[in-house]
Length: 108
Ligand SMILES: [Cu+2]
Image (cartoon, rainbow, N blue to C red):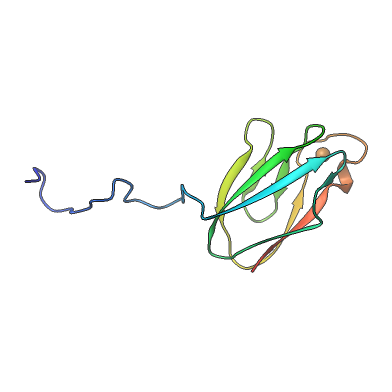
């Protein structure tokens, strides 16, 4: 019945260069001037939605080597990471405690 021959892809989202649905979620809460945990752990090779919640003040979240940079307009991002330890830090110059805003993301 299909007009154009071949294909046979029944999935409407056949291309999956980037995951659009996360199977895990990580919420990182920021306040003046810290993240709510010193270490966060997520599973490797799994699409994880990383979400930044500003409980107090205006902060961003950058994860070095993971291609994650969340700030004002953007509050979440889905990433699939290889095992390792990544450095997390605030990406907005938010005040006197800005440099203290670091944490570790452990992917295992
Ligand atoms: Cu900051």
